[in-house]
Structure formats: structure tokens, C-alpha cells
Length: 247
Figure 1 (cartoon, rainbow, N blue to C red):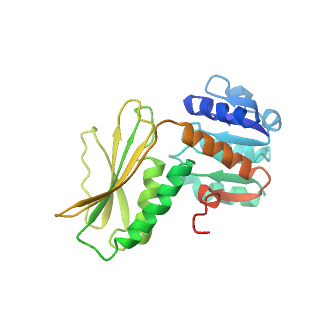
Figure 2 (cartoon, helix red, strand yellow):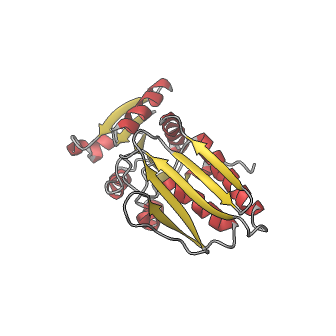
Figure 3 (cartoon, rainbow, N blue to C red):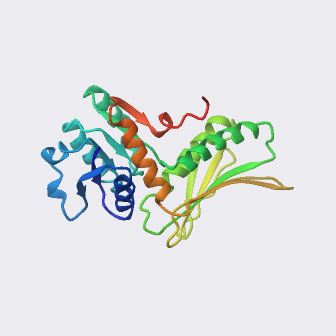
């Protein structure tokens, strides 16, 4: 399979390593220094594009891939305000796209267990719940897409929470959540690939569900697997379509 990498920083280079190890070829690698190479002709040389660029770059990158009828896997987060518009474009133009806040196999297992736990905790209102996420200082968006997915999973299963709010620690602007709001507390610490914790706390005890990424490797391998899955499909998908733990 021939791949185009849109975003060629640390994550893009890790994806390249896994792609090559699985017998794929990188035919295009775009970063801020060679944006002029992001052309319909060059995209046409690839079978699938993988985007780990920046939130601001994603809508334009998607449009370029749709114009070239190139399937695209988007792992960048922070652009989901455009999600419905992008889905409509994808379906109307008969293109292929798959997006996700996290492509790691372990994290997708974590998402599934998170929803199961939230459903179990429904009858026990003495437990309040919050999500904590820790990432490297280079991460541009807050909260992380993974934390949002966790929060949305909890809200879907737990009636006493109806929306999430974010507190980015260290900004000097403390956010206090109301009882019906789910707090996502974000921390930015140097060289942390990603740690997410779901915390249920009562007066007598605390339950924690935690995922710690040791490196970017799990995200990168998952993105390559997603590209392999998307290659011969048409339509608009999320990473949940790859990982079905109910079957």
C-alpha cells in the first residue's frame, strides 16, 4: 500500500516506521516546510492518506484528499466542530474517510470498558465522576480528543451527567463544574505521551480506571491498521467501526 503522510513530526515519523515494517511505501510526507507538494497530482500517487497534522490544517487536508478521491485517516483532534460538514462532503462526493480521537488498540478497549463501568455506576449517585488527562506540552488542543470520547461515553450511560466542562490546570482560570457537569481536568507535562484516568469518588472510597501510553507506538500502529482497513471501502467511518468488542 502506498501512503501519504500529512503531518511529518514525531507522530508522522513513528507512523512511517510501522508502515514500512508492514511492507507499505511512503510516497508523500508533508510538513510545514513543503506544503507546496500537497497537490492533487502528488496525492494521486497514494492509496490512503494519514493525517496527524494540526487542528487548523485538517479541514483543508480533507478537502484536498476528497478532491483527489484519496481515502483519508484522520488522527488529529481539535477540529470536530467541522465534523458534520466533513461527513456530508464525504458522503456527497462518494469519498472515504475514517477519524478517531485515538487509534490505539488498548485505548479502544479502554473506551469500551469505560462505558460498561458508567452503566454499572448508574444506581450509585454517591459516586461523583471526573476524567483526568495528562499530555506533553506540545499538545495543541485541550481537552484531548481521547478525554472527550471518554466523557461522551460516560454521559451516554450515566443519567446524572449531561455535559462536560474542561479545566486546563496552570492557566490561572479555574473552572468549577456544576453537579450535572462532568469535569475533564487537563494537565500539560513535558514528555508525557498520554495518560487518561476516569475517577469515581465517594466519601468512603475511590475507583479509578486508567490507561497510560508508554510511547506513541500504539497510536501509530493503530493508524496504519486503520489505513489498511479503509483502503477498499467507501463512506464515512469512525475508529469504533474497526474495533467491535460486542461481537
